[in-house]
Image 1 (spheres, rainbow, N blue to C red):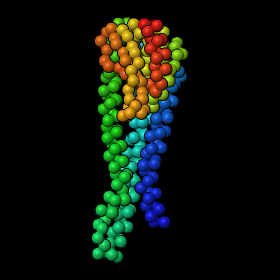
Image 2: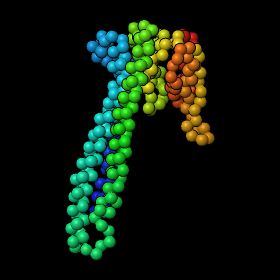
Image 3: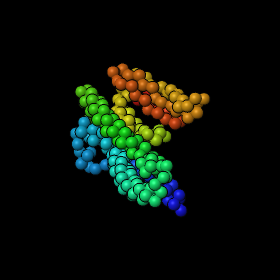
Image 4: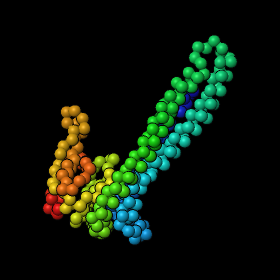
Length: 253
């Protein structure tokens, strides 16, 4: 019973970690769906185009559940290590008082039993730091993208196109949102992109093999722009879907 209790305590944190991350991504997906289908606050729709798009595209809008989950898991794991670890340490001290010649020290026993929670603590901390760095970097890119579109007076039309369009295409990618095809604009919530078709010189479907031997094949749209634009890759699990999007873009550009 003691062994089962110890194993259960060690496994609890990793399982809870996986379940929490799954729930966070599920909530994130729902938030993105609400944005794409314009299930948003009416006050948000009334904002000026630049503020409207920044509010729906900024990274924390869709990634907030993941930030909160990582922060919660970090606190939970810290409490578990400190309190459960200290309780276990006291038991080891009592054990050593009875058996002073026992070769394993209390510190060694602590790290053996709590190795997985400690490793997870560092992983969660690094993920949280990485997420905060990426948020700052991505929000800066989004702001620059919107300023570029605003410079050419395109955001008013883009907002109208985004709200009125009902062409939603699933990418099949877990880490990427579905896309919305407007009459004149290509929209992606994550990664955040607003691309006027008129800026596209050409677009084609390319294959990317995630693993050797062609297993896990993914496809992406390879854009060539008339105007200066940073590298953009929108991935798909099915080639036929990507090809239909290419045909639609080339027809409407």
